Length: 215
Image (cartoon, rainbow, N blue to C red; front, side, top):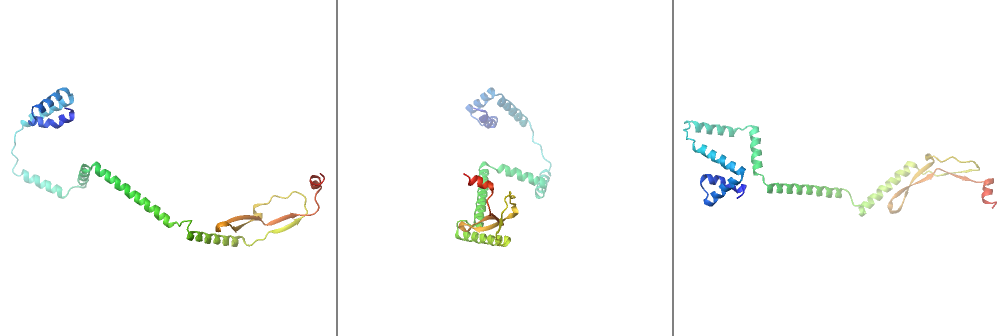
């Protein structure tokens, strides 16, 4: 016999509901286990105290007054009592099976909500490979091209001819114009062209002659 079976059979032992083998097993375990032996002694002491109790006659109006107080408390319980009773009974009835079912239901609802959000996002955003999406993108690109042309205007590069032989200054950012040029697949790309095309003509310098002709 172990401690678990001892505690289960202890009440039957004191009530005389065990046979000889059961009583012998309880007594032997109580002698070998200190904790169970102390529980057996305490149970015997409480049993002797209960046998010494005498029945007392209750007052005539005791039962009626007790029932009246019980009904009054049940009819209008305080909020603290309602919360305590609700939590007590709810937690007492809670089992691992209900916990598992609740967790599974919550997971299912979460997965369903995530799936609905993904589907709604895909429906709201058209597929880039569909013909409608390509036509919409082409229309947007053409609109952007028109806006870019209207913004910068049909600027034609100027051509300046010079005979200067000295070093030229580096071109600044304002010397270039960006053009939106249609490319493959109805897509546009930006081409930067200079506003002024500088061309040098005239007699070559002596340095050019030495480097390229004298050999």
